[in-house]
Structures are given as structure tokens and as C-alpha cells.
Image (cartoon, rainbow, N blue to C red; front, side, top):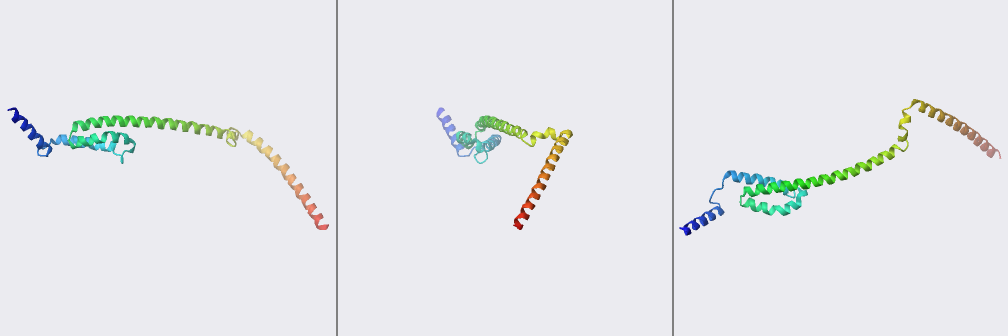
Length: 166
């Protein structure tokens, strides 16, 4: 009797391996769904950031899919999603630190610009009295330079006339 049971188990196993016994459609659908999600998470063309996960888990995924082992595929999916989230979280933290450093550096540059002309005069440029005082000082300086220019032009004309006479 025991020999007949072992023969039946062996026969059933061989039939399953040869595809003679139909697999439950629900199991196949679960396996396909888990496999597709794993492929999106792990495949290097789709998710190159998860190369290490691909190298570690992809052979197991392929074996489980070949055996239509939906339970194993779903377990692998859970593990891979968890590890992918951890990797992404670490990448996010690194990006956050890098951006924090960039913001600090740019803030320093902005402060340096605010202390250099013309930005250091932003408050004074809003003050009408200060502007009028600066205009008055500049008008006097322009008048003085204009008088100096006129004097130099006159001297030049005198020198030029002497050179032509002599």
C-alpha cells in the first residue's frame, strides 16, 4: 500500500512538472502581479538605483516565478519594497544634507552681496532726504569738474595757438 502511495505522489509530481496538472488561476494571477511589481522595482533598466537589490534577489524571483510560487513572490515583494524604501530614505537624507549645505552657501553669498554696492544702499535709496543730499553733493562735484574741464580746454587752445605761431 505504501508503495502505491509513493508511486502516486511521484506520478502527480511528474505531471505537475510537465504541466499536465492545471494550476489554480488565482495563484497564477497573484504570482504574475507580484512578479510584475518586483520587475518594476528591481530591473536595472527601470530602477538603476536598486542594482544591489537586483543582484541579490532577482535569481530568487526568477526561481519562484518559474515554480509559480505566489506566496514566495509576495514575500520577496514585501522584503524588496521594504529595502527599496530604506535605500530611498537614505538617498533622501543625503540629498537633504547636500541641499542644506547648498542653501547655507548661497545664503552666505547673498549676505555678501547685500553688503556690497549698490545693494548696501538699498535703505538709503528709499530715503528721499538722503537722495536729495547725494544729488546736491554730486551736482557740486559735476559743476567743479565742468569748470575744470572748461579751464583745461582753454589752456589746450592757448597751447595749440602758440605752437602754430611759433
